[in-house]
Amino acid sequence: MPVFSCGGMRYQFKWQDVPAWTIPQNNQRNLEATIRRAIELGINHIETARGYGTSEVQLGRILPLGDRDRLIVQTKVNPSQNPNEFRQKFEQSLRNLRLDYIDLLGIHGINDAETLHQTIRPGGCLELARQWQAQGKVRFIGFSTHGATEIITQAIATNEFDYVNLHWYYINQVNWEAVAAANRHDMGVFIISPSDKGGMLYKPPQKLVELCSPLSPMVFNDLFCLSHSQVHTLSLGAAKPQDFDEHLKTLEYLDRADEILPPILARLEQAACDSLGEDWVKTWQIGLPRYDETPGNVNIPTILWLRNLAIAYDLTEYAKMRYNLLGNGGHWFPGNQAKQIEQLDLRSCLANSPHADKIPAILAEAHKLLSGAEVKRLSQD
Image: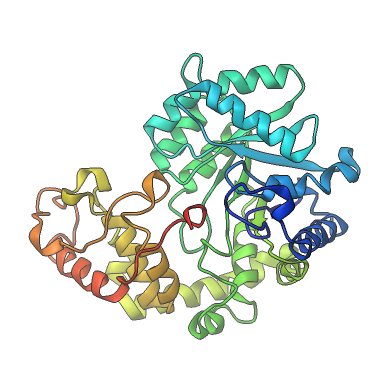
C-alpha cells in the first residue's frame, strides 16, 4: 500500500448517476490524466465509492486498460437493512468499474449502532461480502466511518475487518484510540480527507501558514499523520493531475519527522494557549456529553472544537462550513447547532465538565461566530 492514495470523490462529473454519454470529454480526459499521473508516481491505490456519482463509471473507462496486477482498486458500498439492496449496489459497482474483482471492498459509513448492526448481523451485509470474497470478487473487506470513536472501536473489536477508513489528523485527533485498536488487530489504517476535512489546507489562512513554516500546512499535516507508524495511507482527493505535487514534498521529510515536527507542534500549541487560555486548551473536552445525551441534540463537543479552530488558527471558513452541516448531515455529521441554546437547560448534561458554568455562553458566542447558510454534504448537492 502506498503512503498516498488517490481518492475518487473530487474529479468526477456529477455526484449523481447520469447517462454515460452526458459526461463531457474534457472532464473524462482530466480524470484519466489524474489517474495516469497517480500511477506514474507509484500511487497505485485508486479509491472510490458507489455513492460518488459518476466516479465509478468514469474510472471504468481507464482502469481495465492498465496493468491490473499493479492496481489496488477500492470501492465502498453503503450498508442497508435490506441485503438485496447492498448486493445490487455492489454488482452495479463491478459493472461500472468493468472489473472482475475489487481489491478492497469497504462497508461505507458504519457511523452509528444501526449501520453497524446492518453490517454484522446474521444475514447482513458482511455475510454477503464474505460470499463475494469466497467467489474471488473481493480480496479484502474493511469499513469507512465518520462515526464516534466508540462505534469505530466496536466495529474493530469484531475482528471481522481487514482495514478501516477514518478521520484522524492534526486538528482532530479524537480517533487515536480507534487507530491504536486497528493496529492491535493488524488492520490497515486509511486516513480520510486529511487536506479537506483536515482544515481545507489547500487554502490555509495566513496565521496557519506562519505557524507551520517552513512546511506548508498541507505538508505539515501529511508529515504529522505519516510520522505515526500506525497510519498507513492518506487519501489525496485529487481534482487534477497537479494536485499531487504539494503532497509529494512530504516524502523528503519522512526520515526527519522527529527533527522537523516538534518546533511546529510547539508553536501550534502555544498559539492555541495564547488565543484560548492554557486551562481551556488542556481541559475543554473533559466531561462533555454526546449529542444524543444533550437537550435539543446540540453537538457540544463539535461546536466547541470548531470555535477553538476558528479562534486559535483563523480556520473560520472551515469551521463555518462544518458548523453549518449540523442539522443537515444525518449520521455522517450528527447533532444540531447551538441556535436555541439560551432556551435549553444544560446543567444536568454538563455536570461532569469543569467549564459547565461558562459553556452555555461560549456556545451562544460560537453560534454567532459560525452560523450562516445551511450546508449540505457534497453528495446531497
